[in-house]
Length: 390
Image (cartoon, rainbow, N blue to C red; front, side):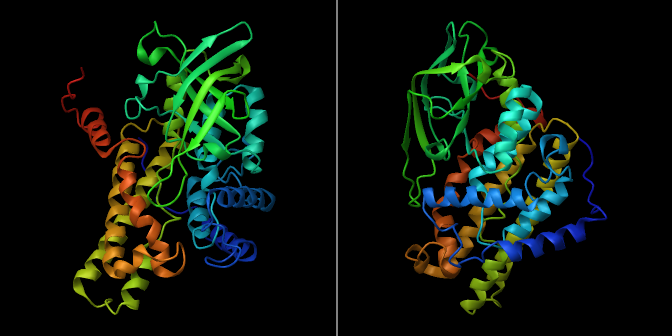
């Protein structure tokens, strides 16, 4: 893996200042009437669409995408700098995370010219929300065990099966779908990847209500869904390689849109605990975790920009992110007390942390459980014996 270049590009300071100036002129402040991040799912997704369009019109969309794909062709450090500045405002692009961070880079590698021409500009303009249909009730961490079937017909394919934990599926225009297309081949070689039009007949989406009150996740039922050959991403039966590219393109989540160390410091001061040595140690640990995540993200971005394989690095990022959120949310709960459970979402210090306190435990499961992530690191990086596989 190439070394991470920690020297800032010469133009980064000017880029950051220009980004801050544009955001101050165009983005609503946190907690202001224009802040859509506290809205329910539909309001939030529509806000993300408007914001992505504003980024495109302002010249801030696809910062690290190559110019040939419609982006600005800048470095990952520029992209990180903009995301960190954006996190200070009441805006979000979370509904486009799958599309911008995963689908776009995957289509640049595996997509046909027609697919790239159709989907990449629409992503940058905020016209198309994408979801990821990988996990199934019986195939989560063991993705190769998926059972959704895609059978060839004279006109293309017919898909039947079920997907689960699909973020924003209710609002998505397209989905990246993995389906078993040849059950006679080895598990990893009989899977095809499709760019699925979510308006196709036979698709039923049911929201899954979470304990934090949101219904971001969904289960999706596919019944005799007709998919044309033109929707195949990459080669038929070669979807495992496409999935690897897509998962590798998922940048380490460094939590810019979550409450951070500054919010913990504000809460400690509000409770008169800023001088408490135990509290100060907890805040210091949260700061260290944030910095570790920042540099892990730089490692991911450096590898991707050089076309290098990520290996177990995404598992390291997932483990670190889950531990960081858990540590910060626990400290916030101790600082803010029982009021954190009754606070209005996103209103005041307690409200900003309320949702995260009940969301943080789920991060240990999302994108593969902590146990699976540790197995990946142990087996693929450290060379330890593999777990028994029945």
